[in-house]
Length: 312
Image (cartoon, rainbow, N blue to C red; front, side, top):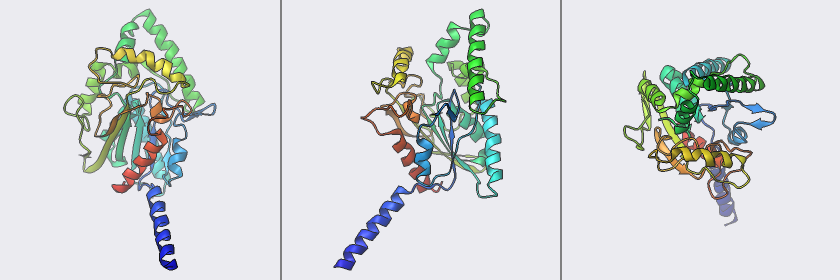
């Protein structure tokens, strides 16, 4: 009886250990959105996310990408870094699981279509695949050809360049207009016409769970939020409470302050309405997220297990 009980406890511990180990076959690359950085002044873009994944045995990379640029140019930067990671691995790395926030999702879609040999999966989070009304409003208020537009662009690019320098990416020069124009309705439509794979065929539909590009099978996932106001102490709530007003009359069933619920759909939709704002998705600001929703760190950990379970 004693030996049977010990065997049972041992089996349960082994099962728990296996369940908690989310080691993926391919490394995870965390692809940031606008204001792309890894760490500035003790502020992590992916607050506590890398450590959460690494504690599960996942190998994690955080690339350095231009703060403000088109997804195509950012994608070219990302490809160079993926090639570098792969070359430095002495053959141990074949492909990557790209997990991308906001514009990082568009950047990853460019990489997926351009270099599918590097990509095992693409997961987009709070990515405005079909554009954001904020971009339409911003470009409408300050068109690129006006004096106000030029002043806005000069200031914004200066901020972007400062972010690049502080995050160790001083070679990149920001281009705020290229970034904004991509997220207007016409700009998003133009991007999607070039890179349609993974997108739903109808508004608020779901896309394919995988695609094959040049003989390379790539799994596709997405999730997003539907809560501009989630934590009384989160300073981003005030901003997203205001920006969410831009979605009035836009036909979206909800938004996170930047991205509409339907706009975040790509591939297999894990959940499009987590009670999270646009920064809660990557556990910002400093982990001040809703107490009544699954913690973002848990979502990343669960997704690593999901990738592992399908052999990725």
